[in-house]
Length: 466
Image 1: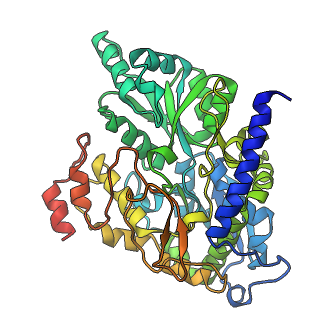
Image 2 (image 1 turned 135 degrees about the horizontal axis):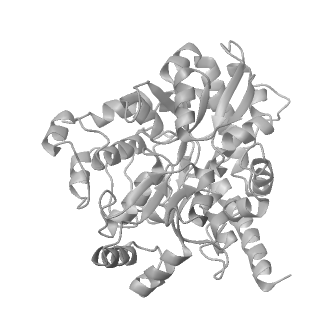
Image 3 (image 1 turned 180 degrees about the vertical axis):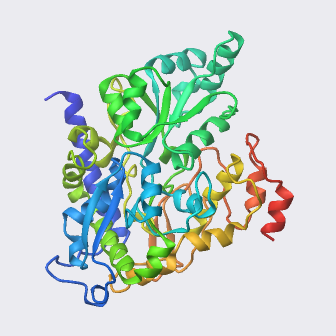
């Protein structure tokens, strides 16, 4: 066995030990035996045969594990998991009723409700599927150009976009066309993350580069074919490019915003109103699946389950990189520790914070996707439903937040949420540029961005949110 592989093994064992301690701190209880049915939530189910959609990414895990480990069955549900080709498919099939619910980008229920990019369809979420999980990867050629443009900037992590800006400026002087980057969907976390990262380095993502949509599983092939020079995507598609030797991962979304929300479980408002007990049973099963997945001793089984062809369809060792607490920026460097790259239950990860909803709405405004003044709080409360989460969580013996909003960017280390049914250990929530986000001061927050493409007057927004 090589020294590098021995070191990876040691790091992963450290992750398991550290994670066990964090699990205990977060108050993760034992999962009830699967042979027993949750009596208070299984009777009176309006619909028991359900079909939930997923995209082949590691963060579909809560739905897949709830299916494969029997958590849905335990709560009286017979669930079929349907692998979909794109986020547009997910949105449209849920909207049309072809899917009962689905793995969704955190901004999708908001966009669907507001009609951003599609016909309006009221959509809600009562369950957050995970924190973190994305990365930005660039081609080897672009990486080398960035190092040449600013070797000092490229030595430090988190990696800024300063060197990329210098490459872009050189291309402009040479009369070259803008470089093409990809993200997975216009209202995706990935779109907002790559824009946030670029803009922090003075790059205007609407003028200085081309940003296109490519479904996650097709990212690596498009990078290899040189159709794009970089992308922001969820796992395992960053690590896949690095392992294949065709790209370098330069920053994770954990580094951009510590413990940021990533995916949610979404259903239409109409479906939730018709099937309230079935909805709560599904959320309850997903909470238990998330608890089980965040126990470090179960992570390797999670990897085995989701790597299957019917789900993520990726090599086990590639999926294992991030899921067992390590991250590969480059093959030459070898794995580094990143125990919080995938968080499924710790830090109140399953709770649908309305403040997270407001943050996504501010980004939709920042980049011109929302063109009329809206009341952020009203939309957040229409779409993100912690009230349903709390009902579903009753009897599970887990701590639940008693507030719906919190500030972001104010904790550089772990902290304790006391405004909960019992204290909850929380993780850091820093933004890499040092900004803070107060959901009660949205207009002030938007004023802080030098690079933007806002189409709504800030005074109109202030009036709408007074």
